[in-house]
Image (cartoon, rainbow, N blue to C red; front, top):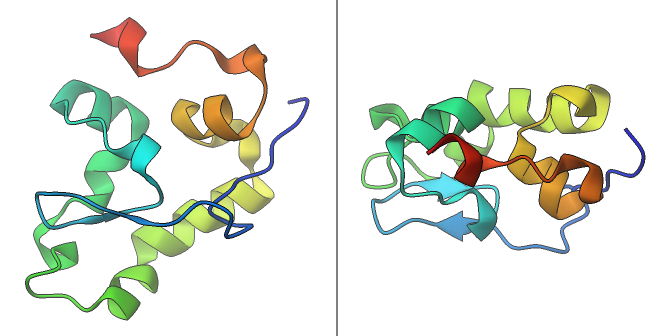
Length: 101
């Protein structure tokens, strides 16, 4: 991978709260399409135990899903979601969600 600088890790892009009651790394991750969410892995962020009606934001951010996501971005960026590569990387990763619909 050429250049990859995750804005959520650098804290230059704010977290996103979905209208469904979940927290996502940023607004670019909010695909609103079940197929895309599953392929990209965003469905893992939208489970009952991570719903903000029952979970606190700090607990969500400390969950295994979030810790694994951060670890992938930092230590294994080749396996980061395509959304992250596209918006926080370079044009080499133009193949994203819209092509799988």
